[in-house]
Image (cartoon, rainbow over all chains, first blue to last red; front, side, top):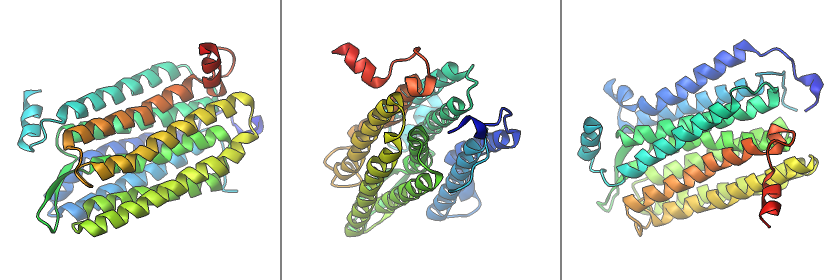
Length: 74
Length: 254
């Protein structure tokens, strides 16, 4: 990483994304009974939890990688 | 505490509850340590490592807490009538934390985003097929998915050693040394997980739920907190002379 691609300013948009994604990931781990209370069986509720975790993971990765710099897939 | 014990007892898992409680405490202590250590960090790249490593410990702590209180537990009844207690929260945890571990080591090595994306995709496939192995009701299907997941893990480890290793080879000596240590932690710890699954209640049932939970807790603490401890103390991340590299520590020990 060169110094030039590291902005001095923190991206608050990425910071908020990070906080929300982390919160979503934690909530997902406790959400299965909530999903089941809406009438879902274990497996559909569980796959919903995994989807929540996957979305949260994508949010965390994107937020971390853009926290201080602009990145693109090379 | 009494309420939680009763809840866990109701689920018939009071035995291994102690390991889940210790796992929660261990992950929380790790998270608090990483947060305290990284509180004043201002360097952007160093900050990234702290954020990722703190999240790994935090999500793992939440997962252990979820399993302790019985949220992360279900039963799978096989076609042969055998009923297995499955801690599904492990898989949700691993789906989230193993890519972050790979992201940590990938960023350290200076791997390209494309390589990181490939590595994380294979890793997610490994976790999902491992989960499929756990939820299948037909024993043969369980072992088939376990085999697929284990092969995917071998691809992840190969990719880590060869592709990410190539990127690390171009880095400075401190980074290379730290990368080698962290890579070896992943190689050893991750290779034990499928074996633990195979000998545990979800596989051949040679080890009971109590021993299996203990084994997974030790592996998780080693693979997450041990990994983070070495990464965040390394000179490759901290910089300067304030922290020894793993190799320097080994040299000093000699």
